[in-house]
Amino acid sequence: MAAAQESLVAFQAALGRIGFSQAAQTAITNQGFINVALLGLITSDQVKQVCKLIREDPVTPVPINMLQQQMLLAFRFWVVNRQCLGLPVDADDFTAITAFEQSQLMVRLQEDEAVADKESVAKLPDKFKQPSQWRVFAEMIETYLSQLKGSGRVALNYVIRKNTVPVPGMIFQTDAEQAVAIAPLAGEQFNRDNAKVYGILKQLCLEGPGRSYILDFDSAKNGRGAWLAMYNHFEGDSYSNRAKLEAYSTLEHIHYDGEKKGFTFEKFVEKHNECYLELARHNEPVYEEKKVRDFLQRINAPELQAAKQQVRANENMMGNFQLAANFIALSVTPAKQSSRYVAAAQTDWTPSGRGGRGKGGRGSNDRNRGRHKGGRGGGGRQHNRGGRGSGGRGRGGGRGNHNTGYYTDEEWSAMTREQRDSILEARGTKRNISKIETNEDATEQGNANGSGTDPTANTPTGGAGDEFGSQSRRRTNYIGMMKSSSRQPCNMETLNCIIARIASQRNNPAVGEYLNLDSHADTSVIGANCRIISYTDKSCQVAPYHPDYAVMKDIPIVQAGTAFDDPNTGETVILHWERNTIN
Image (cartoon, rainbow, N blue to C red; front, top):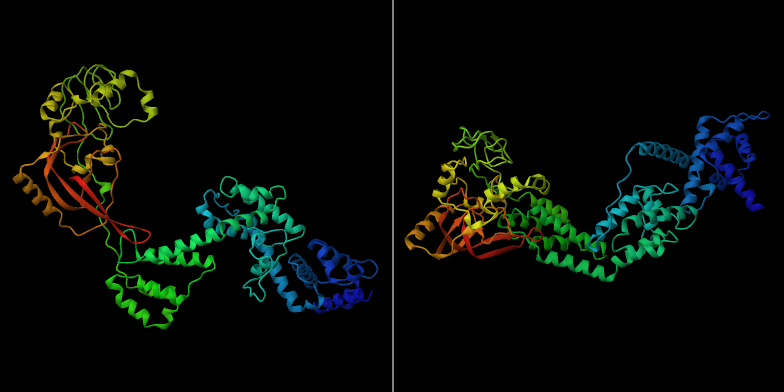
């Protein structure tokens, strides 16, 4: 009885500190609020209703202004928050300053909630499908849940926090951080939040390696239990040791010799930060001074030696890794950008033009409108994929141009049998691929028969590299084969002249280039992105994909190599090829 009386007195005293008169205090307690904890049982709207009843009491009305009503709402807000966090609720702790702070916080939260309703919902993280994705997935889940509010306005990531109780003496930067750290992991509110977290985890982990760890908690909808089961596995000793070994291995092999296309100074610093963060995640942080000392030892670029000495002489930079990295970055010389890209090589060759303009009518190619004389055809207008009328090699019986390039399955199936046979004939693949000829006589014969091809098209204007790999497949007319002669000894006088010409053209400084890989090619071709190691005494003749090109003669066969810069470590790897032709 004495304890109840003490609670009542303390509650009335708290009401007095926030501006309520003795009559108002009595009127509030007459509504059944005999201690401070009972304020947590009603809603904000019910608090307003209590104030209205007291003001409009027919017998003894007591005035309660809007400011007093706001203070009482703040009192209730304070009580509810402490009850949600499992903190003691003592009326003696509630002062006028506390009421003012809680009122401001309450108004701000109400405004934030009103804005949040109009904003888009936080994006759900990607599904966890590979063990290697665990680190990123764990961080994404933490971020995602921190944007969702639980039953007591506490961010949902409190459900998956590591520590059941906060570390003694821990200092919190914000009230939200404190709420996440101390929110109780039991009770009705926690059970609702726990089930909600489990539903999120289940839809993200059901198709990956986390499936076996979360299904044990399916019946209880225990999100915290499911998360800790996965965490203990993927953050266990075996995974932790492997992650630390990988971080140390990366730090051991990484070095900086200057700006490279695939490994810049920015990438060099980024790799250090990633490794140090990973070590810190596994409770093995590295001292700042050691970070800086090892960082300087891994820099071998001559132009940065002076900057390194300045860092060593500065005590502040030797104790701050990021400060030291930012200072050295000021002395980095940007890499020169190459204007030549092998993957974008172009050619001026015109695949086909217009056909004859006599009785054979007009033939056309969708991409090129150059005119050339054609032979005689039957008549009508003939286009790339099937002509009209009796002329051309579409549906008619004459001869004309055809697109011998690539067709999709839908395009091929939509053609008639006659159109398919006509295209296969033009490709030379219908009966015998050996019928394809590349000499000038065969081309002139085709012109006499009305094929509509210009004899001058025999001279290619692009580079030899354009005839191989993905570049050749970009042409309108191409035949999926390459014909090259057998390797044979070359006249030494001719070979020496070719080598001298190549050497004079390859004196450019080293630049970064792209390398194309064509897994269907039977011969490799080197360009300006490779260095010739040695010449053989053999050469070959190369016939490009299309018969309208002339055969390229006396192409030297050489040994060559190039350098590849590993984008992860900056290490340079030399690639060597035994027998190659030269572009």
